[in-house]
Image 1 (spheres, rainbow, N blue to C red):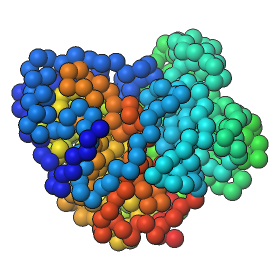
Image 2 (tube, helix red, strand yellow; image 1 turned 90 degrees about the vertical axis):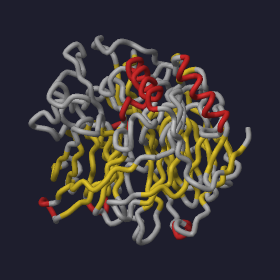
Image 3 (cartoon, one colour; image 1 turned 120 degrees about the horizontal axis):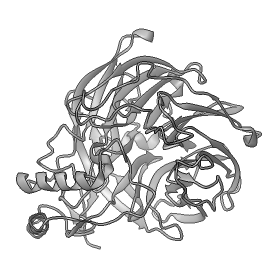
Length: 495
């Protein structure tokens, strides 16, 4: 695989008409964002593109406007150290978590544990086959948590798909003992309403609280009927995880939340949350909840209390995830336009749709408000065969600055500065060219996180990547060392 060093931010000016046609075709094939906000638990399928789109993608590759198929391009200040392809577990790669010298990589078919004591040569410690999309993953002490958001015939790791219309179907949280990283043991399971698309840990000394995000209820689903206007809260005793149980279902949207279409065309109806990020040191949480963004108090983890709520019915289609800055006076929300399978990083879509929304947090206590400041979106236009939209990222802990790294599916990995929340700017990037110039293939970086001096990315198709950022603007972050990182449970880097 060749490596193309590019020292400036490239701007791809693909034809507007063809780009628009590509977006339209992809979204029609994928379905509405509210229906499938992330790739399903079936293997990614290739989707055809028009002759014109194929010709334009080919021409853009030949002219150098975009990298060639699978070719790597990156800014001068990022170094690609290594890629570790998939091995025994072949499904779609998903989220990442970290503990000590280990990285835990989720996959729709299970999870993989890497020894990253040498980031240039990650070593596989174990692989666990346990199908159940999307297998969102986190760790705390000797416990590993895994989300199941596909209807299964039971809660075992040998389960098979079963319609959610059947009462016996199971979805929810799985818990493993990872005291022996080479031999994780499945120790507990908790069924939750509408499954667990993602989850967020609120760890305490004796217990771990788990906020379970799930959505899209139906009258035909016995265990997932509307209204579904809150989150499941699970209490996990560290010393006896087999006693884990749901302790509440706090309602976050007593008025039902964003009604979506036809009141707000193109916006997802709020029927739960997609993702929640907590900042335990401040007793704060930010929820990305389909058609709404919320700020809430978690002083009592069993009874979170909403402080403020915002909507963007012009440019946001699906509120996907959230990231606080270090001072907790800003929060970045992402919009997953096109459900993660659309080619939405093209010129036709524009700079605001499928972007990050940057909000300042003003006021104090229960009077705090989310105030919109600006959008950020990568301006390296992608081909119509590349799914691309804002996805999972984390802070890079630079004192006095607000800088984060973020995954953009086939848009790659972006490092950007939002210290001035009204004028965000990209300062580094890494990406691959399209998986195919002929068909639309779901691939790219699902999560890109900074941990102890390196950037780790889990590419849905290509595997586990390790990057090194060499930039004086971020060098200070190398002094920050963490023992554990679940990005949705943000540490207080200033301590």
